[in-house]
Length: 110
Image 1: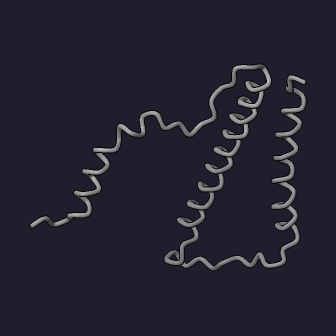
Image 2: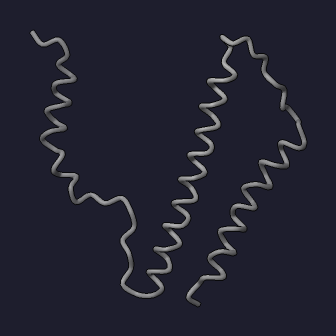
Image 3: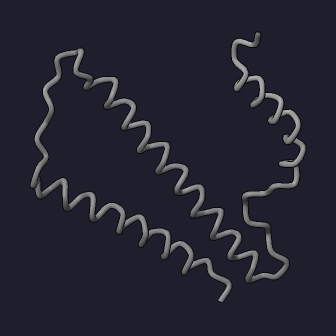
């Protein structure tokens, strides 16, 4: 009798259908024209900005979970209606968007 039939079935299906993903591309293909290459460059720039933001956010989240866990006796801070925090999480994304737009505007192929 098999102990984990679902795991074995999943492994079998994965081994059978893995070659089907060989041609599956997730990223945008580089373009053939100057304009489409500029769009591809913009896509990759924004992608890497999002990757960096994701790493920073998840790093801060995991660090905070480890340092401020309940088992260490930490007491939560109260940020409800904290004007400075609310202004910062509105201004910082806006500044990121402005920086991305000005970077593309100065380097566009217009």
